[in-house]
Amino acid sequence: MDWLTFISKIVEALAWPGAFLAVLLVIRKELPAIARSLRKLKFKDVELEFGEAAKAVASQAKDAVPPGKPNIRLAGQPKEEMALKLESIAELAPRAAILEAWLQVEAAAVDVVRKRTNTSLNSMPGPMRLRDSLVRAGVLNPKQVEVFEKLRALRNEAVHFPDAQFTRGSVADYIEAALAMATYLEGIADDS
Image 1 (spheres, rainbow, N blue to C red):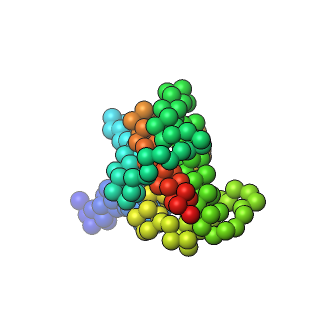
Image 2 (image 1 turned 120 degrees about the vertical axis):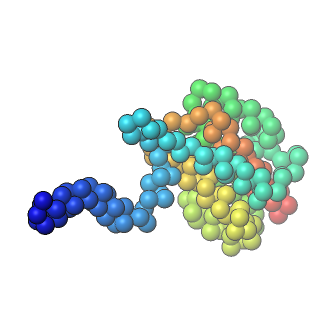
Image 3 (image 1 turned 180 degrees about the vertical axis):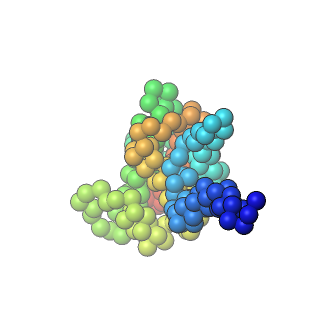
């Protein structure tokens, strides 16, 4: 084997792995966002699931969000009744349960912002404006902001990825975390 053949064989052997690494280097900053948006990845016989985000946010909410007052009402119902309602919705339409749980967080956030800042919000502000208003009002600490953001991101997955599949457990975890945040925010709104 001469040198030219040897070099061509090395280049041939390294072409695809090199191209793959080059693509990874180019999109390395976007990889975490891409991975979070995937629910399942299947390649040949390997199937990976990325459904741990809801479980992680539920665990994080337990640590970051103090328990709400026992008499707090969400949409005119005790928290326990709202949880049962959302669980029954989840059995029929998991995506709808996620959206409804997020709406409880949004409604509680609007109540706090209205009462803490003495402003009247003519329309429902976007979640990022709500988050910023809650931070300015001193309602959310950095860990709670992180929980709020993860809840928002998971809600966005439910809305914007129609092929996403949601397991019963992941929806239950999401509901738990969302209701913890909503109860906490409603408790602060009641104190104002």
